[in-house]
Structure formats: C-alpha cells, structure tokens
Length: 152
Image 1: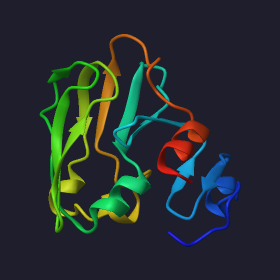
Image 2 (image 1 turned 90 degrees about the horizontal axis):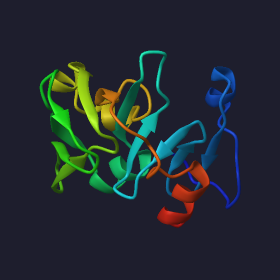
Image 3 (image 1 turned 90 degrees about the vertical axis):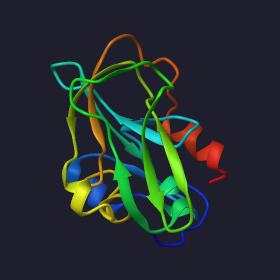
Image 4 (image 1 turned 180 degrees about the vertical axis):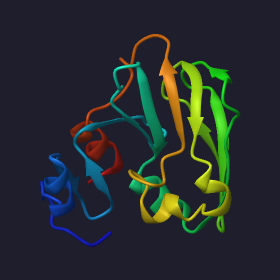
C-alpha cells in the first residue's frame, strides 16, 4: 500500500480486472465493492445470491500483522451486524461483523495456515466468508462513502 495524493487514482491491477480502485494515503478501496462502518467489504452477489466478505485494506493496516483468523462453520446463519468471527493481530484481537444476514456457504480455509493473506491481499486471496444473503444490503456504503469515513 503506497502513499498517494488526494483524489482518485487508478490501480493498474484493477484496470486489468475491469474494475477501478480509489487509492488514498491510507488505503486501497475498490469501487466495485460495498463497505461497512466496521471496515468489512462485500463483493457483489453471484447468480446464486452469494456474496464474498472480508476486511478492508484500511482495517488490515490498522490491525497490523494478522496471526490468526477465527471463522464460523459452513451452515451457520447470522443476522446483519452479528459477530461472525475474530481476527487476531500482533497488536489486538478484533471481532468481525457480518455486513448482511444469511447463511455461511464457504469459508477461506487457507486462512488457517496463512492468516497473513488478509494483510497481503485483503480483496483477493484474503477473503473470509461467502454468505447466501437473506434480505437486503441497504446498509452498505459505496467506495466514495467509505473513503470519506476513513478520512481518505
């Protein structure tokens, strides 16, 4: 995560994927995702109504080196804003809040052995859970709103 001037910069990796990214002095914020005030992101639903959830670049940067991630079991159900797990860093342990209501259909098992993926690739290999959404996603923020929240 490099330093960037204020404004919208495009991440060349995002262009290759056909998305754009807002880069601030504090975080990379892909514009094709939605966000929560608790610093989780939601990747759009697939054709089965399943979204991918993880923590943002800003959150992993604030936590520091992540050494352990506790995730729920597949089949567990959560309401929006319910705690679904924890992330342990050298500095602190933080709860993870579900941005949407639904059932866990997959967890990122790689995080058991490679929790640092959350630091190195929070929007890619560092994803945490996949949820079949039950209800809406109206409480989520756009990339611009999230950037304003974190002061970018």
